[in-house]
Amino acid sequence: MKAVVKVGGKQYVVAEKETLLVDRLPEGTKELTLDALMLVDGDKSTVGTPLVKGVSIKAKVVEEEVKGDKLRVIRYKAKKRVNTQTGHRQKYSRIQVGTIGKK
Figure 1 (cartoon, rainbow, N blue to C red):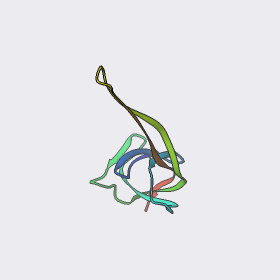
Figure 2 (figure 1 turned 90 degrees about the vertical axis):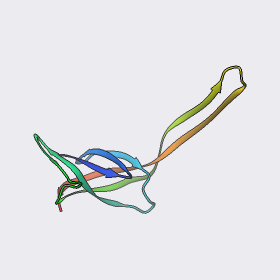
Figure 3 (figure 1 turned 90 degrees about the horizontal axis):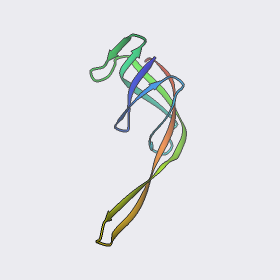
């Protein structure tokens, strides 16, 4: 069984016992209860308007602060002596989906 959930303004396709990186959650968050936007069970799919009624997803936070890959941002203009480099490293929270089931 798979579900589409919304965490931090982004949508993710999740399955039971799956781990995923989401945008950093507030400190001290240990468990999450997410609402399903869409539910896929084999060939049967249910689309919510906007949420699927009676379905919730339990998830727990495995790690609070995980650093993502470093992004290099380069601004360069030939023959103008313009050359700047900056970097960015996004922070994420790692969550593990527990159960997808009825409320």
